[in-house]
Amino acid sequence: MTSLAKILSPVSVELNELLLDPNNPRFSELGEDLNPIPENRFPEERVQSNTFDKMKADAFAVSELKDTIKTVGFLPMDRIVIRKWKAGSVNDSQKYVVVEGNRRVTALKWLLALHDAGKETFDAEQLENFSQISCLLLDDSVAPDSALLILPGLRHVSGIKEWGPYQKAKTVHALRKSGMGTQEAAQSLGLSTKAANNAYRCFLALEQMKADEEYGEAATPKMYSYFEEAFKRAEVKKWLGWDDASGQFVNSETRAEFYSWMVPDPETGDSAKLPEAKSIRDFARIVTDEESMSVLRGPSGTLARALGRYEAEHPEDWYPKVLAAETAVKSLTPAMLRSMDDNAQSALLRLKDLVEVAMRDRVLLGAQ
Image 1 (cartoon, rainbow, N blue to C red):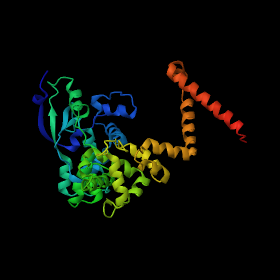
Image 2: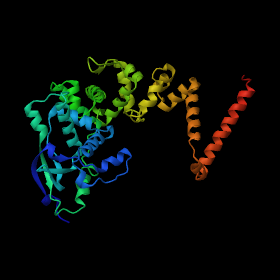
Image 3: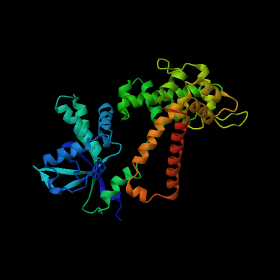
Image 4: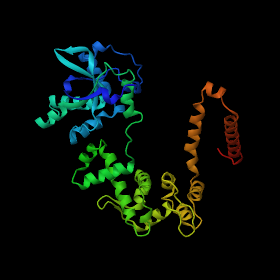
């Protein structure tokens, strides 16, 4: 196979010379059947306009990319790959088809369209940055057909590994500390302002735990997800006493308890009472119930025992579960019923028996 490095050469082109690929495989994500548009029709205004509109769909997150480029400029660290349009030129202008980079080209065209419409205003330097693009030109006269699949695949299948939540939060924090505003920092990373603010709070909360004399050593990046879960639940956030002004949990008593439940007991070797981040979801149910919290605080207290106490004292919680079971049963199709295995049939029969017992008990108890 021909080395791809030998058939890619650097070239600088004008943005208006680039044609979005109307047969982009991405469009299958929109639920469309791919009906290839003939190559000779690629430059038609309606074809390019329709492709541009499809690329702006929420599924492709071009809006966030546009905001990032608007904030920090277009940085050609990972160059767009193009090939010559096979049907020649348009008005003596060579055209190129985007092989890899349709999102970035869409974002750039979107920014220029906003400028032309007066909805954004960019200076001459920015306009040149958006318009003069450094690309890699694929010599498709010698490139194998597979190259058109391999080049996008290198990025989107084996791909660039996305940063984890902690790495994103650390970067948001660094940008904020450098003097960037909330919105500017978010757009620089392609995040929504809300997501960037949440990441910033979680990072500060983990840093606060790192500074704790007793539990600081346990505050590793993997603990970040505990704080993500805590901030998603208003009752836990309130219990911990989060204060946006200081960027800290100000209730020292509940904060110490929270830290202690996130790690194994060093003296007894007992498992953590909140053994994983998703434990916070169940913890949020009991955090305002003093009796359940007393069970959790006990020497042999566990989250399961505290939840058991809570559910015994709050029998009304059964109703949503019954509704969920009802919805699940209604969703069973004839095909699913025909292919149902013995375990599934037994589960349905047990459910039926339990409902019958409950209804008989209701009658015996004299319910109206």
